[in-house]
Image (cartoon, rainbow over all chains, first blue to last red; front, side):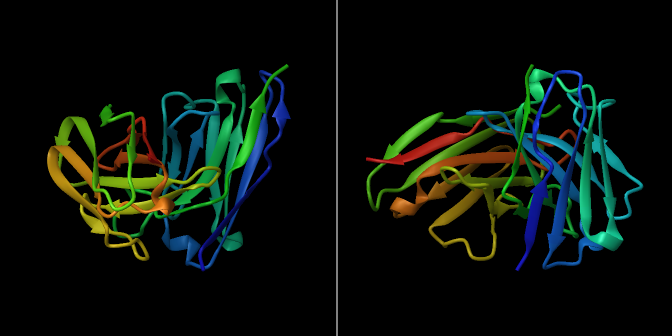
Length: 120
Length: 107
């Protein structure tokens, strides 16, 4: 059974930093692109970032480019999101998601999500 | 960026009814379209990919169609467990973008 378990969510002040983690199991992590998708309270889904299998290629939404960094550790089957210069509009539930190996354009499995609140 | 315009914003269906949700892309692509269901308080789940391919474990009353800029999701024989919010998403190019969602509830 595929499992994606996020952690690291917290209340943080504007301008602060946070690191999110996602522990993966039940599939060959090193063969899958991985991503973060967020959902502001009562709002829709918004893609944040994607990372290739080896970690050498990354993609970011314009809203987070330059402030967030996605990375992975295939030996630990873990995905990370380093979030800097946080703004109130970054307040959201952050989901870790896997992308299928053959066509990494959509999200086949999702974690339960972790809440990030940016407020003073 | 490819904008995804989803309609309707919300709809209600009776038990056993058939409903359709539409998604219009700002530029065309070849079936790189996925549909997700998000039940209240839960994470999104993949329903369809490549426009019309059913994800494993998804009931066959869900079906997808379309190409180019127009795509649709049909739910036949509406069941209580189908209540939730449905999103389309294009996987053709970055940035990956979602529709705004369609809230489906039961009459």
